[in-house]
Length: 150
Image 1: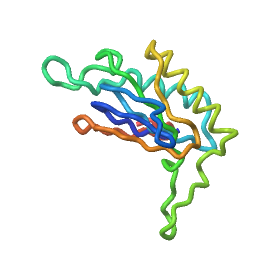
Image 2: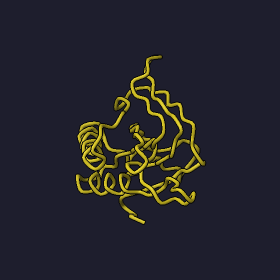
Image 3: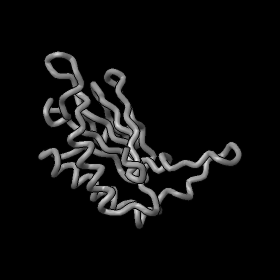
Image 4: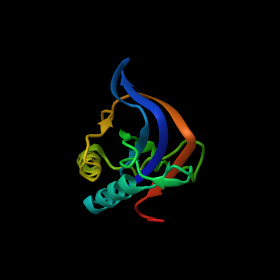
């Protein structure tokens, strides 16, 4: 699984002009599922994101998690995180999992993240044409890949 995590001041996801999920202070997590991904990948990623200390403490140091600061999380599925640009100018998405594999893992990831946070996460709709609005705070943007686990 790949995730692009952005610390935000506010964010929302809309489908056909209707807001389906919105948060104020917190994290926006764009998530892409790969063919080889497993439940263990989803659990590991949810644990890392839930505990990641990327919010400022009283001294301004990144030392607090989204849970510590009472923030919210907005999760948006994004298969394009698995784009391969190796050949030509048109990206290939062969590594991105088909919906029958990706949807259960995406949903499992959200449940695992909710359990980690002790709070519900807001989200878009898998496979929908979504518009995401975001005010990136910092800016802080972090890339994670369960295959690299850096």
